[in-house]
Image (cartoon, rainbow, N blue to C red; front, side, top):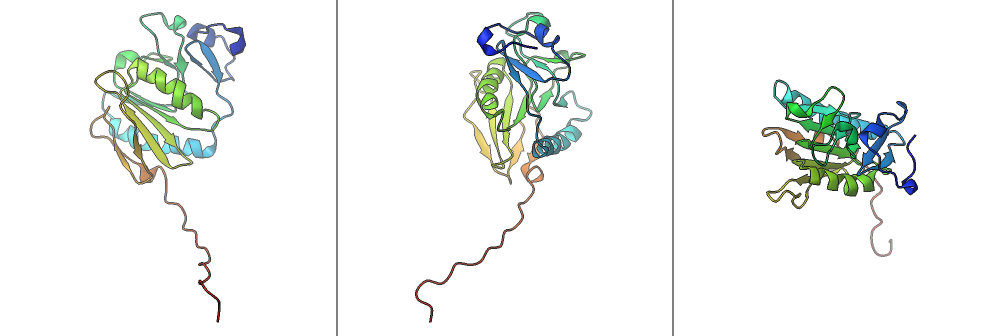
Length: 208
């Protein structure tokens, strides 16, 4: 069981491997974060719909798609796995370099990483993990907002930092830079909302 932030201990992937198998944690720059509560059905439906579009396109290609849970190690340099201080479980990641794919984990920046935002993880995904993915050199980072039915896309610029975000609504189509030719249709991720019929407004002026 990891200690709380107040203990100021720096945790690593080596520590992470000793924690109970029935608990889910992430470590970001040495600090542990519990992945609780479990994702709700809507969250998992969005993940499944995205993977359903990505996986067929990548079949037979070097790039591989992995839905959570899978451990992504983000090292600072060439330190051993057990010394890595950031291990996260993105909702979806795409990796095109086979050298990054190990037997039990992915190590290094993914080409595409997707986080489906939940209320319990929104600030961590939008701030801490976004900064860590950027620093690692992830080519593309998506934040999917099921409630707002939109996707925020960050792409790595020539200077090694994310460019200004691009926003897509529930009818948008996203061309994936990391895997040219792949286009994700958001209308298949966010189905049309049912039409709501309400009573029309009363006419202005006095009734005759």
